[in-house]
Image (cartoon, rainbow, N blue to C red):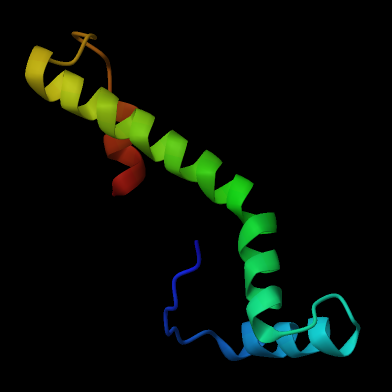
Length: 81
């Protein structure tokens, strides 16, 4: 099922879409955008999965407490100065 949405894209993306059409990679802007989304989708899905794992750990630590006690973090504090 297709859904119509209106979006603004960066000028570089618009130019890339036009090149895809000119080179015959895609027949329409719609097809070009869908190709860009599909081929970039796997990387975004990996990124989302990683962020979900981070969020899950943070929520677990907020609920149960951080699993490590007495860590020496002085070197981290020194780097911020």
